Amino acid sequence: MPTRSAASHVGRAFSGLCLAGLLVALVLVVFPELRPGSGGDDRPSYAGLTPAQPVQLSAADVGLTAPLLGSDRDPVSTLATPPDDTPLVTWWQDSAEPGAAQGQTVLTAHASAEAGGLTALADLTEGDHLDVATRAGTMRYEVTSVRTLGPDRLQRASVRLFDQDAGDGGLVAISTEQWDGSRYQRSVVVTAAPLGQPEG
Image (tube, rainbow, N blue to C red):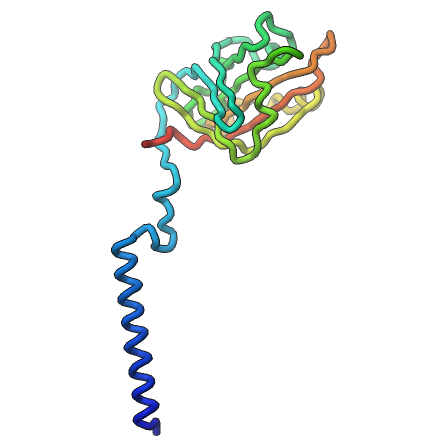
């Protein structure tokens, strides 16, 4: 049989545990942000966005801001020919509008030795954010890949990159560079997943 001393020790230990539990519960009530899994207050929240024409692309992580001009010319043809205005960034009008649930928003630009509307794409990394301002609000995307492709690889990838029957409303941004007189020698291709319209 346990002695009175042992029983007393057990009782005091039990009382101590009860008191500690009450203190923890009190702290969690007063400071709910300390609850396990309650870090959501620190995470940004996003809302849906009505699909609308994009007017500007920005990426604060790399200091990129570029106005967008709609074009009905398919991106394969657009990327194959040097434009009159190199810094110009175009949105393919047959691609998804930001906020759409299907397809992908396609943005293209060219770069010369002096300028380029999307040359900063090469400085992006996975997890960076891209914001596309539209006539209805701003859609934020999270970069999922940054790749540099030669002309042949870009040609092979173009069907998937520009497909509007698949995708979940993501973003494809391409900067084609190093014109050699007949074609561009490389393209920086960024894909990004839609997060939504930032709230707050």
